[in-house]
Image (cartoon, rainbow, N blue to C red; front, side, top):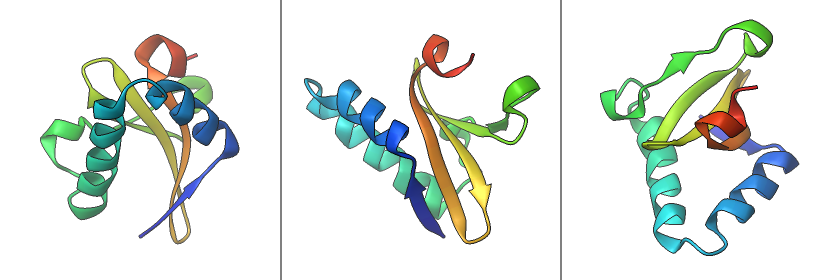
Length: 88
């Protein structure tokens, strides 16, 4: 499975991890965990509803989520941030 990043995801990722090195490691670990075992309970994988019907979410930490979309040959990372930031 390939992983692609929207420019907006990269911008939000840099903003979140600029002063938080442990979070950077947690995000990488979460993405790797997802690639190896997408159904792992710690990820809390779920499909979104409403305006975000094509998107899915996984949890990095208690309040940090990664929003992504499945594409033909992998996933497209769309957004990352706190619960209130990513669910609009």
